[in-house]
Length: 243
Figure 1 (tube, rainbow, N blue to C red):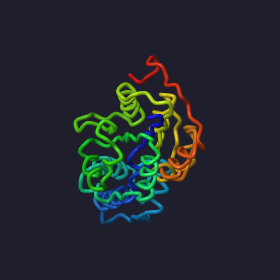
Figure 2 (cartoon, one colour; figure 1 turned 180 degrees about the horizontal axis):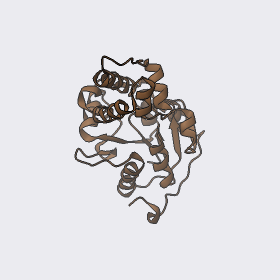
Figure 3 (tube, rainbow, N blue to C red; figure 1 turned 45 degrees about the vertical axis):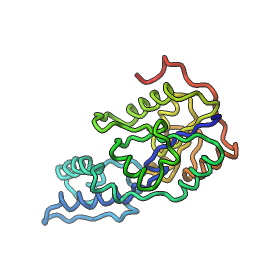
Figure 4 (cartoon, helix red, strand yellow; figure 1 turned 135 degrees about the horizontal axis):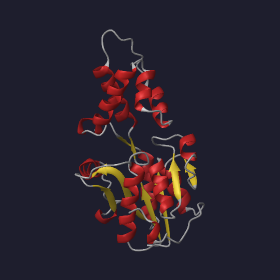
């Protein structure tokens, strides 16, 4: 195929805001003491803090926790947010499916690249019939036993594998909602399209200078199909790839 779109999963395709908020509420309940006065943030207040990259510890302090309890809050949140009971709160972004269908109908190849582990991804792909867009060899995720470091280092490894194993194409793009997606695309000389439907706001995304910032996956795909977005043909040489 002449065109290929890599898309992140959480943010462009799945809305994770409710999962993150439910974990916040759980942590507030578990960490708070009866003697404390806690201000429970509304979902909109919490999510804007997350999208502004305010740390978990600071979110806890804003909610009324002491320094010590804020540290405990942050540890509990990290241990909880990617556990099975909370994935059920994720919601499919319906417009994303419309975009994926449009890409498929246009003959554009689709690939998903995510920091989810295989067990975290498979169930959702089946639940929402998303495998019709992503053949098995176009699914790039972490293995179940992979030891994570940081997304900005782990995600480029997925892209390195993808570029080494997929057939070459004349045009390709990376669509995502975080700095990890932008940095990954930039390391491989792939245009980065950031979407505002995920966990970073425009101010945070602009820091990493993506090629474009658009509202959502549907807008990004429509602009690619309509040839409104410029692209680059050449991939970087192996000497500058993440090792």
